[in-house]
Amino acid sequence: MFTTQENPPDCYMWTEHGDSYVPKNAKWTCNFGGLDRPYKTPCGGRNEDIENKICSKCGNIRSYGSTADLGEKKPGCDKPEPLWMVDVEDDGSESWTIHFIID
Image (tube, rainbow, N blue to C red; front, side, top):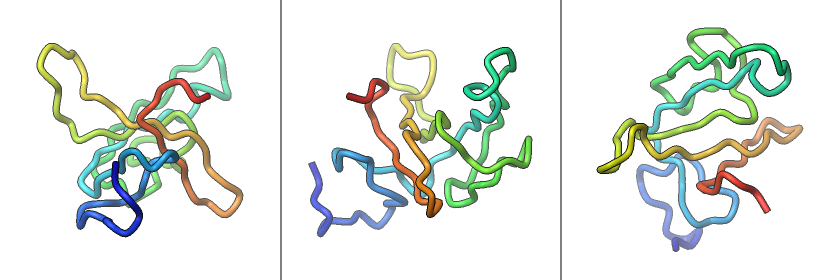
């Protein structure tokens, strides 16, 4: 576990519990339309720049349910292990987690 005093140079944002961080070189996948419209398919657009919050495919702002990863797969896995966007606050700040189920 890291402390806030140990910000790695590649840290974009710490996760909600402080147990990991979203790296600056992470790619993110847009989830717009998937959660708020139950019969629609999420956008699914892959975006190369984690610091750009606008999806290059649909043009919407990154929202709850989006995922971020480094595009690398662990041995034996079909997809890269993601970080999950938990929430967007009223001020626009984001909360991310490495835990799929939030308690």
